[in-house]
Length: 153
Image 1 (spheres, helix red, strand yellow):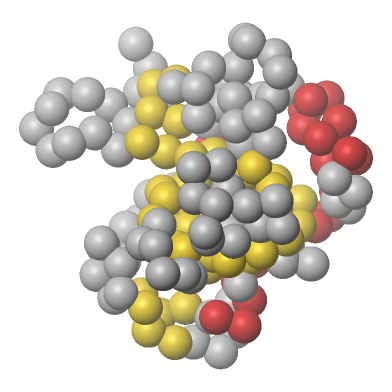
Image 2: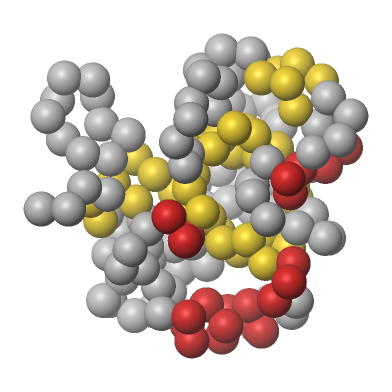
């Protein structure tokens, strides 16, 4: 299942830093524990980034505070998080394996900086696509960096 398939249905238009997006507000993802750094925003929509063909998607906050996170599915990053660690968190969150989507937050560098995009392997977002619930979890294992380059050295 792709991130877009996880949130598709009746569309509405929302403004984002990437331009307006058509998205489904009825398929809102709820973060019952909030999202670290953004306690006032607990509802988000997941959508492709306008004009983007790559593996990146936008997690757009629905609240007074403007929150837009670029994310990518776990399977687009290698090497990545050990499947046993994913299963442990999935089980703790009581998410069925068939309903699980794991997202990684991406930091995009400023244009012309010469830096590559970075991904946060330490704090993945676990999404239950059937229940529309998401939780960002900080993994205790220090072998997972908060910033890993998406470009091979």
